[in-house]
Amino acid sequence: MAILKFRVYFEDDDSIYRDVAVKHTHTFLDLHYILLQSFDFDSKHQATFYRSNDNWQRGREITIEKYDKPYKAEPLIMSETTIGSEIRNPNEKFVYVYDFSRNWTFLLELISVSKDENPKLTYPAVIRAEGVAPSQYGTKSILGDRFVDIEEKYDLTSGVEGFSEEGDVEGNDPPGSEEDGLHAE
Picture 1 (cartoon, rainbow, N blue to C red):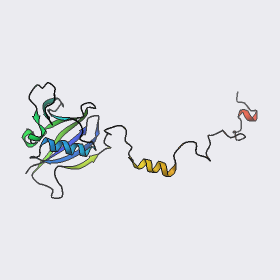
Picture 2: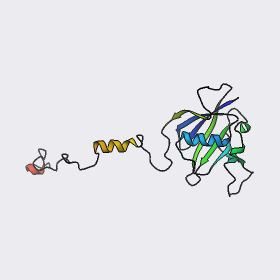
Picture 3: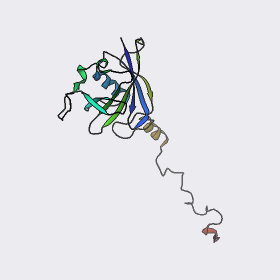
């Protein structure tokens, strides 16, 4: 059984990518779910794949369902289309768009084909993750939820007693200031 390894780039920043491995018999729906998992996205929105070329131009669509929009060619359905059936060359490319209102776009490139299954993996699998994934619904800290714990532990609020702004205590002005009657002219 062929194992296909894709590198999946976040379109806005190619230093953020995931490598995923799938069996050639998996469907595009399987690939859709592993992509969402690899970038920590939920599965609440519409999505589509496009066949692509070396210039990332969008070709025939492979969608979750047929959407209410015009198509140049009848789309393929993710759950009915195996990934292996759409691999035509060793550098096959696809464009993946998720959540049509936010238009999250990812570029998939086939980087290897192997006959050897890794017995330690359950396919489809994320086998490499580089960069911090974009946040699906707003900003995300590198620390994530742990920042709240740190903020509470160390009370990072401003105006904490015992701290003052420089120069706001009388009599502590540096020499040469107006308080000393010395003026730099």
